[in-house]
Length: 220
Length: 249
Image (cartoon, rainbow over all chains, first blue to last red; front, side, top):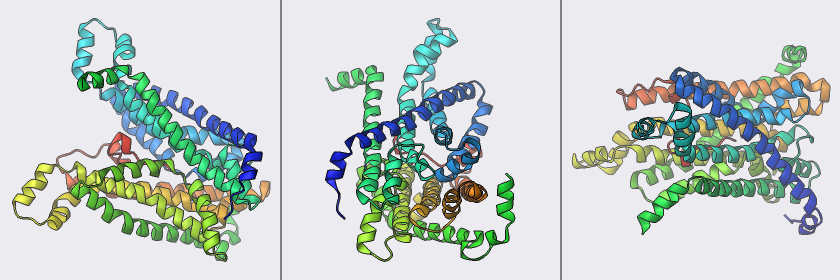
């Protein structure tokens, strides 16, 4: 197999454009999915009865293979971006919901009691005490969801050229029997997943400065 | 909706090598064979790492790689290699099958490792003190206790292969994905076929996962009758550690 490096050099703009489109395909569902999951998680913490049914429903949505999920929406939304956005959003729900709930549950009871004793009101306690302590598990969920979506977002392009992204490079490459293009699309989607994962690990460190301070103190 | 009913009730939809029964069989066959192949590779390694505690970083790295590598990408990265090695059969079955096996290995291996690691070490030591051999400890102590987690790995692996087999239609594989692609290629006229194919894939995946979830629940009750284990949460794939959760394909 010969990789046509000259093609890659000549089409740099197209390639970067595809990476950018791919990020949009991932970020929009991730943000929407996080909002929905956060709401469901807060609800489930107040009403434990909600947890079971929510995991069952989001679990079923998570089980549907991606190509089928996209295809099911084509007759409803045509080839608009919703065909890609809706299933990609639903795929995040199970992962994010469970991790957000686990994050809140990981906050030690003594900490909550201390906060109550210090006179925090429920909303203040949620925002200033529980939320920061739940961050590590939440970001673990976001990492998994982001990496999963980067892979799944390539699949939408099988159904049409309107979704763009790295999947579009793959599908066009296959249609024109041009290995450089489809292998590049595949490799870049894997690379993007690793890069995004590493970036989110950094975000977690920045969002939890106390963890680093503690580690430094322990080291000193 | 009407298109879907028209397609589902057409005689041709159910007959011959392009009919639903044949495609379904094709889909199930490649899934079964690739799960068997992946198990043969991943289970012994996962059990070895879990039992001995050696090479644990391998399992964790594999978990990370496994979830970052998506099926469509794996198929197209394998495709040119497969075309070069087998110029006549390089399309179709080979890239799809290889991708399926590769994507089924990480969840099986990682959950085998994590399942064994979660077994109380005191129990293992007690078994050793009672004079059980390593092989007996693995079979009679560790495996029954780790079975639900192992099953969680299989569930993820099975979902991965069902989804990947569907995508295999892009490189010419048969299976149920064929209906989605052929329906798509026919445009408006193929709406029924597109929808029907997607519905079949979705129902197949959900149904098989449900069966595996029920088996997993029985295994959990068997492993630890004290634990309630009947809550809905245990119906879902086991994610042993946050950093080792399997990805979806």
